[in-house]
Each structure stands twice: as structure tokens, then as C-alpha cells.
Amino acid sequence: MVRDLSRVDLGLDDLPGSELHDVLHAFRAQGPVQPTRFQGNPAFVISSYDVLLEAFLDNERFPPHLMYKHSLEPAIGESFISMPERERHLLYRKLATPAFRSRAVASYEREGLAALAHEVVDGLAGRSEVDLMADFAARFPYLVITRLLGLPREREEEFHAWALALLRYREEPQLALQASKEFTAYLTPIIEARRSEPRNDVISELILAEADGRRLTDAEIRAHVALLFPTGGESNHATLGNLLYALLSHEGSWQLLREHPARVGDAVDELFRWETSIALVPRLSASQPVEFHGMEIPADTWVLFAITGANRDPAVFTDPDRFDLDRKRKDGLTFGRGVKSCPGMHLARRNMQVGLEVLLERLPEIELLDLEAALPRRAVLRCPDAVRVSVGRR
Ligand code: HEM
Image 1 (tube, rainbow, N blue to C red):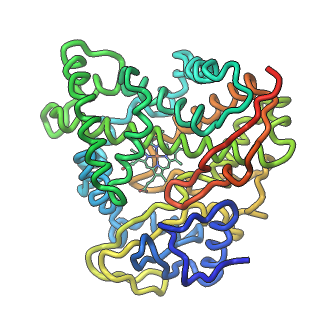
Image 2: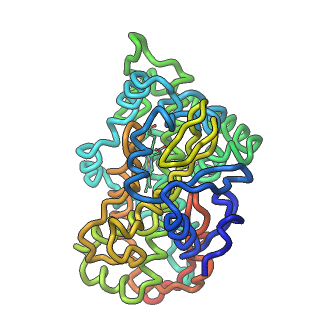
């Protein structure tokens, strides 16, 4: 049963499992743009596919950099995600992201993406129960992203906590600023070392790159690394958790993939549609009131881009709440659209596929122990709290 929509807060409520989706179906049934609340503030939510696509492409009414300027820039410094000028945003984005393009990502297999996943699973040897959220999903994507950026691994146990804190400036500014201080102290000598001896990694590329007719400063390099590290690590961590939940809670799915590993790609693509971790992107509307699909939106108001609502819009996807590996159309709005569409999507897909292949091979007999803890929760960074499994025979 759907709760009273007027009491929903999409930034504060837990909304586990089907609850979030029921709420978004109910909002959509009332209209594509609906008033709601976000972290105690008045907001609007967009949950239909066509209207959300239109909103993603509308940089005037919904300036895409504004939320990041307030919520991320104070913790990491100015990077392309919060740059207001279209040309500068594109230029810095181009400089910072070649390592994440499709062809580059395809070559990582040879450089050992799977080896990193195997290494994490090796560390679980001898245990009969594990929490795949903490013990696998929180480690593997960080090993990958740090390898690509060129960060050494000595402080690996702090990576996950730093990333989470850096992304939570809006909710916990002190924690984010402390993480920023520690991350800066960690990065500074690494950047210096790459200046004297460049390597094949993103930090070295940024050092050698030129923008606006000059080389990047250390502060600019730090901000870009501090952007890609948490966005790359945390979204993948959360989405891997959702993938494991989906496969272990749908009877027969794990065995099916074990027997038919060629279907791993289908499972990952359907998961991206069915339960993505960036379930909702909060935007701030323009600094003057705007009208959108019959709603008067006041200046500087939260407008919630409910990606997961668009991905389950029955006007586009048949039987949208079903997790269906045989589904023909799976291309939702998972990676956004327009100027901010995700530069890490190829890496995300590859990470998920390789991580899953290694788990299927190494932990073929796992079974979910705690369904309640494994339900994906929250709307902004949606994921399970834990995916506790018994490991069975190995
Ligand atoms: C499953 C994993 C991922 C999901 C679901 C995801 C989703 C998204 C979405 C929805 C956006 C658009 C945000 C907006 O419109 O404001 C976005 C942007 C972005 N993503 Fe991802 N992402 C994932 C993985 C990654 C990875 C691995 C990286 C690191 C390379 C990354 C880096 C970024 C950055 C830097 C932006 C901002 C782009 C810009 O400002 O031009 N993401 N992502």
C-alpha cells in the first residue's frame, strides 16, 4: 500500500525495496511533475521518462552545475562538475576523462581488472559467511578507480570513508571538510611525485594537460582527482550491492548466470534499469521562477530528477517492476543525459560485469542470509546496508 504522498521526504525517508518505486508510481499517476519534500525543503519530483529526458536537456530552467556548486565544491574545490560555463565544463571534462572512454576501458581487462576482483575474494578465504557490501563491493571499485587515477594503495582502508564523506557535504559539512583535509594531505606528495616522474595514469595526464592556454595548477588537479575518486568509487559500490540483491533475491538467477555466464551483460544492463544507485539526482532550479509542465517552480528550488522513476515508467517499459533478464528494451536514464551524462558509464558497466563474473566463479554456492538488510534503501545513493551471504562449498 502506498503511504500518504504528502508526508514523503525523498531526501530523508528510507524507502526500502518496492516502497520507493510505489511512491514514484503514485506521483507519476498524479502528473509528471509533482510537489514534494527533499531534506525538509519544498521540492518537485519528475518521475516520467519523457518529461525527465526533457528536463535533463533543459539547462536554462534546471542549470546542471548549480547543485554541485553548493553541495560538492566546498569539499573538493572547483572541478568540471560545478563549472557554470559550458565551454570550460567541456574542456576540463575532456582533459580529465580520456581514461574512462569506451576504448580505453575495453583495454583494462588486459591490465588486470579481474585480477583485482580475484585479489579481494582471496582475502575472504576460510570464512563461511561474508557481507558482500563491506567485504567486496566497498573494495573492488576503489581498487579499480585508484589504479586508473594513479593513487597508491597504502591507505586503502580509508578510501571508502573519505569518498562517502566528500559526497556528504550538504548533510555533514564538518565531516566532509575533514575528509577533504586528509585527502589533500594524501594527494599532495603523489602529485609532486608524478610531476617529476609521469606515469600512465590520470594524474600524470592532468599534469601534462593544458587548459585555457596554461598548465593546470595543483589545486585544479587535486579537485579533479577528488571528483573522480568518490563519484567513480561510490556509485559502483552501491550499484554492485543492488546487483547482488537483485540476483540473490530472485530465485534461480544466480544459478542461471553460473551456468550461462554469457548472460552477465544482460543482468548488468537490466539491473541498471531496475535498481540504479543514483536513483534520484537533485537539481536546483534557475534563480528566477520557471514554469514546467503546468507547475510554477519558484526560484532556487529543489527539483528531483527521479531516474529510477523514469526507468520504471510503464509508458516506456512493459511490466516495469519485473527484473527480467530477457527484456528487450533496457536503456533507461541511468547515466543521465545532456551535458552532464556520466563519463564513467563504460567503466561502471565493465566493473559490474567483471566483479560479477569473478564472484560467480569463486563463490558459486552463495545464499542470502538477511533479506531485510539487503533491500536497497534511500533515493539519492540507493543501496543495501549489507548483503550477508553464506559461502557454502568452495
Ligand atoms: C553504476 C555506476 C554509475 C552510475 C549509476 C552513474 C550515474 C551518473 C549520473 C546519473 C550522472 C548525471 C548526473 C547529473 O545529471 O547531474 C553522472 C555523472 C557523472 N559521473 Fe557517473 N555514474 C556511475 C559511475 C561513474 C564512474 C565509474 C565515474 C568515474 C569515472 C563517474 C563519474 C561521473 C562524473 C564526474 C559525473 C559528472 C559529469 C559532468 O559534470 O559532466 N560515474 N553519473
